[in-house]
Length: 322
Image (cartoon, rainbow, N blue to C red):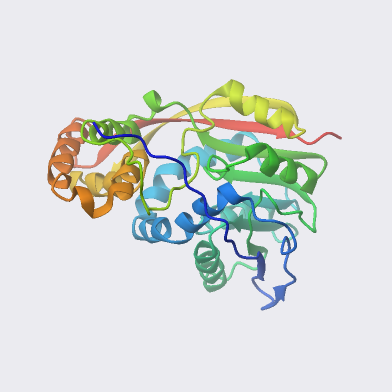
């Protein structure tokens, strides 16, 4: 085994931008005069760089895998027609467009993400689709003081990567009207999401995190809100009340076939991040790791060849004080 990595930080950052869809206007910057949270900058650079490339390449399989969890959470606590909705960590914008459909023409959905390339793609695709009641912004929710208020806020897998979740969710709570609602979906524990955990275990047989690496890390990781008590505590400190967690267990298509499932797991997730940190220093191990991962995922192949595993999330709902 090899030693564990020490944490790194990058003090540089970039200002936030608001991009309007439908009216062709770029609105005034928000959060440009606020300090950048140092330990969140690396994750921002990761999502705007190598992770954007990976997400864009595998967006169909990654989006489809999480869509069911998002739809179930929306059915549990939906926005109302005419609501002004904030979508946190909107990525390529499919959730923002879905929220825009749910609130109707009298409502509005606003998607935010730290990755400028995510937002540019989301804005372009929404405009091409003719969706008029959406806007998008590149901003770090941890330091952004929103200049508008919302009735409802949603996040599908977008809050787990906050370096400072209390600060971020406090800003969200302040942006909600009195009694405004939060609905966020986060992964539950690793053991209930074996398609992610299997890859991590396979890589761990060969590698630990290196002491030094130039690779960018994605933040706390997908399981940072897996513990119900932790999530509840974060939301209480952020000023929310009426906090509820609903367990959601759904099948997750890891790949259309075994080749794709292996490729996705070697590209994104906890195991993939360790490989990315080692870079070309472990090229000789990659074929062995890929072969072991293929064997581990082969148990999940169903009729037709797709790789399907159990997955589990929390649908977390809460309210801003009235």
